[in-house]
Length: 240
Image (tube, rainbow, N blue to C red; front, side, top):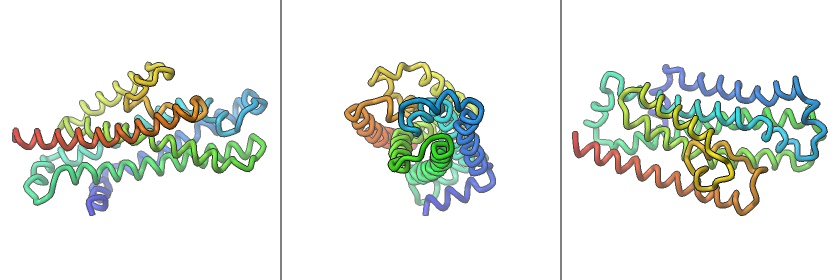
């Protein structure tokens, strides 16, 4: 019910068109790269999906994270505008329910975003490389991994957006976090656990053990960030 309600709230905000157009823009990155520089990649000795993601994923993930940050700000701006969140608090419903409803919306559109990009990578692999039997599974595994590592980013962006009433402050903090994440060395496991750095990681760059560690870390971070938001809401309510 909360999920449907949150969808209705963003119906006229441009939230869904922004994610759709952003997904198309990110999906165009590998297609344009191959269209103009295919000779650089076609002869490489690696799986087509890995070649394409190694060449394009940093830009694609940057667009994804910026969309998540902007989306989180839009979701909470609808609450803070005209003090709607204060009226919401007078109803017999928990603020945490609203937070998790927004989380479900942002995860859903992020899945849509990744699906559009996966179709693009899959299509580029078929068009410019020899089709292999495991192409579909490789694409699925990579984008499933991306979704798992995107969950902490989604929740942390919503936590930031929920704390500040000014959307531009939340957006500014989110953008700063994104650019800090781009400066973190990918070889440092601890530093890459920063929620905004996780989505930049790829399967091909790491061993199976490291991938498993990142997957577990992403799940743990997701739970911890959700608990952090619940604590913040309780503390804020006690001071109101």
